[in-house]
Length: 125
Image (cartoon, rainbow, N blue to C red; front, side, top):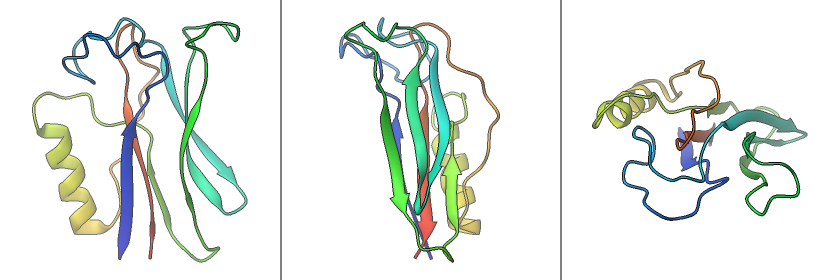
């Protein structure tokens, strides 16, 4: 059995007009957001950052979504949700996860201006 959690990269957000959080240009604070793998000891996850702001900017920062996994646990990670429309991403992720206990993988670059991505992390239990 596996359990996973998902969150979007909130770095740079202004919480303003955020109509479609992944697909349409929305929040002016988003852009050039990066989701990178993180593995430190038993901690495995995703580090969410942005290349849009310099270190002294109020919107600069990072956040982490991680799991603490035993050495024999299988860690699953999806750095990016697919950049598709409507419910396609949710259906694709759910179908893969429920059928295989893993998450689909997408090799995507950082987001364009005013966009962000979500990522997911999990492990076998």
